[in-house]
Image 1: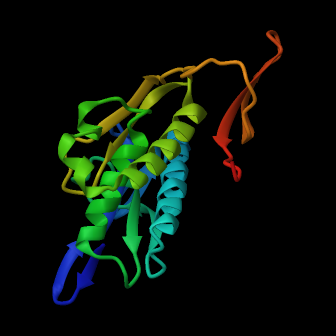
Image 2: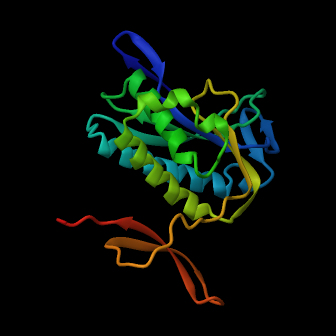
Length: 217
């Protein structure tokens, strides 16, 4: 979908998600017929969409962009030559959406996915100057939270993540996702808030996602 900035139209697409391999479908008189319901949307595809929309919406709030919103749509293209007829499209919308802001949000999306997909395409050096240090740290935190949700999961049917329609390479989320890592071990008291990410009944352990809470001191 094009967004008009003055007299110039531009693509407001931030992220496109579709299966890494083309699904089996038939074009019957202009209607698409799929062999299985899972051919339309993969479970991991939907989960990744929900995660990136939530992270980018929080990023928008952090930047205080009241005149913009992060929207998503399930796009169906019923043509004979479309390899992936059903894709999730995440866009920056609203009167405050500009081409420069779309570039910022595409860069933000790369940062969010860096821990989940440690490929060079998601962390090109030229991306860094677009974001402030505060914004980068905010996005790293969001990315770690998403990576924790997918930690150790096996995604058999890959999901392709592209940053805008013109991004022809993108990156594939497939296979066993990176495991959780302990960045630091220390004895002491930490003031923080946490939420459970998983349980291991056999080992009587719980995995927590912890966010530090800073007091007056």
